[in-house]
Image: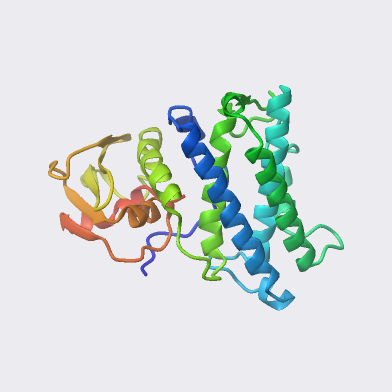
Length: 293
């Protein structure tokens, strides 16, 4: 496996939630997402339950984070999304971080006072199951209800309730792999749903121009050998990402599986080095221009 760019933390703000309002997810696909969240969450909990305290404190594959840090992060996310689901259905404004991201987030990454590492794991398992039960019980119409944040505490912006399973699946799939516990690779529903969304999201991102100068403005053709092809171009500060033919002209071509193209976009390890054609140096600049997550 090869690393591309820095490994970063996946949180609900990574996903460019504005684009989620434009992503059509069918009822059947939504059920598949909820099932995938349940399956991955249970796998994480069972794997963590088999570890001792020293192993839970062991560094994860996410720099500066232990496995316990990831468990705390996922534990808070499960509780937050459950709370947001209930509030949205009741028409009550709700925030992912009620006390504000900057003030509250650091405390969510460590155990509560007097809480043991095993307590964290059990709490993660319990809150994950509660979230799964709530989502499994929702009827199709409920997923269209908007989650609205308090005016004084905006973070995600208004998003449909139906977008939350996709955000949660991203967290548990990617951070599950970060644990380094051989939980298995990312699910097909995760890859097939998130890859096109991430490619569309590039349209509302700015390229990281600290990574290259104006001479490197140009286009990359991202070709999934088992999925979509997109042409991503940069002209000054303008970014455009559009579906394309595998034969579309571009300064550089990056060819890989859908799974590995998604890893490239998320700043995670690729299982197989991508095939690059055209201007190789420019092709290699992609992850610097668009660092994950």
